Image 1: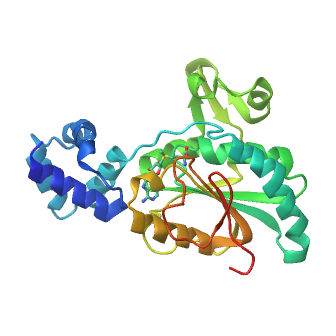
Image 2: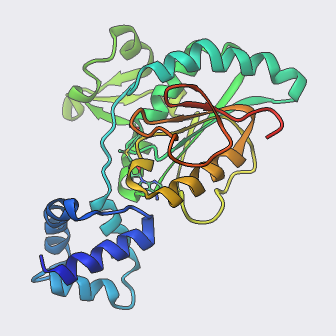
Length: 273
Ligand SMILES: C[S@@+](CC[C@H](N)C(=O)[O-])C[C@H]1O[C@@H](n2cnc3c(N)ncnc32)[C@H](O)[C@@H]1O
């Protein structure tokens, strides 16, 4: 890959997603673009860069971001967050619900990838929210990954570590041509709304405030000013006392924000903030 091509891809990806591709990502970019070259019949990277600048390149720009972004995720990733949700956040919010006139618990899984995170939240809430209603908004920048998340169908190896009772309660086993696949039951799928959202573009399209926001393992790709903007944008969407969960490698220590650290990777919006 020529320097000028890497620089062009780097700047266009940054402009679109704020994903910051350092020089160490050159190999990764090159490997991931191979697929896009084949899909678009571009003979080489130079031609692909030209295609990205042509009128009507909007769809391919989306495909480029899809190809570059890392969607790695798994069920109950960073399990301590789900324990905290069940043992602390939900009982606390449920106790405030009547006084605050909250008809339900609203949770946002921002950068939800292929759905493992919002469905893990859903399984946790199904076990602890009691009669209180709840709803999960799940968003991601990648259309491709959102389609997978909406379907809620996972290969055997993706769910193999989930306990048998969780599998029985929340998944349907596939038979015949669906052998080896498991689908999240509609009782959970109906509680999760998936939609496309670039976290760094404009205001999120939600009218309701959230008691809990998960925004994990995505900030790591952004530079510090972008992280600050994003944390402020998320904080605005939290109710006072609401919780923000970030990835364990994404401590907010190095950025300026108004949240209080409660535990590693768990932050709370102070009352009145
Ligand atoms: C590594 S996955 C993390 C998934 C999940 N939150 C977890 O912790 O397991 C990162 C996700 O962030 C999404 N993403 C990257 N940039 C984004 C942006 N600007 N807006 C929204 N989502 C973004 C990617 O498409 C990807 O699905």
